[in-house]
Length: 399
Image 1: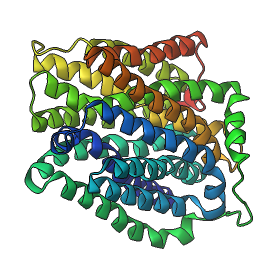
Image 2: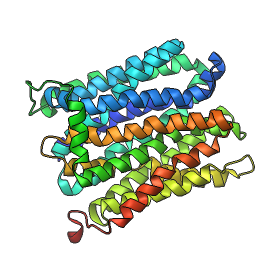
Image 3: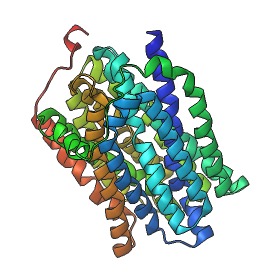
Image 4: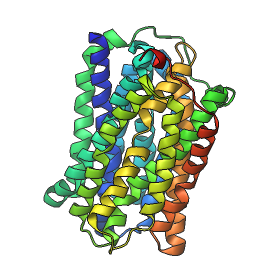
């Protein structure tokens, strides 16, 4: 149990730093756009490129995790994210492109790495809860970035803010180093990366019906999450809120995802089949995403907060239960690789979501219609999961 807690704590902090680095471009987008005179649609393009390169990183990271170890690859993830952030601080469009490539690829391998590590140390019955606790690091990072990012940018400048984030990532790399001898075990030093790893990773999840359904859910959920992360703050500024207020609204609503992830993990571990929990979240995304599309300046703050909280509790809270199911269904020793395969579909959603949103924004000038269109896949996934019927989770009968 002690080693499980150490593993959980280290992976929680690792993903918190990754989440802060990923959300800063979104919450700082209004001030960056104003400073550099860029078009707002470029935000969607930036996050689309991030997801594009993250897709390949997740499909190909399995061999590296098995060869070098999940903790080492967690360190690599933080180093790549830090250097991607450094590129962004320069401000030129080419450097933003490099930031999307390097930072996006680095952030993408953090979750498969942590899944490989926790999959080895988590008891199967507790896995949904353990993975959900670990994944609360994502909304925790979003909350920190959303709350502190705009204020720090106002006081220090946006470049200095992202540089501080990069320094924090690099510092934690050294903090994790003493843990390598404990957690990077059962390595395969002769394992080599091959181009065939890309299609092999996709085939490994598509040929298994259960993993295939998780892949569809990952696509829908991550697409809406990326849209919310990229555009929610900007959306709020278009209906009358200033940047700092919009950032706080974002951070407070995202904070709902912290207890939400633990709640879904607890339900999936002891009471309800994980697929039914995910079906409920999918329908929650469809409902709240549609209502978000209807936001105007006449909406009361309480109404906006309630809808955003539902969207956060669903679109921002699916990770733990989906990842624990993925690790449970993966062949022994392959949790990292299979997780990368399932999440690669999520990256496809994260790639297409912001690009579709950006295209709709450019074509219509409406921030709302993109939310409506991007919640449709979640509606279809929710219906698909419900049609599968009830399925008791392992250990639920004894709970």
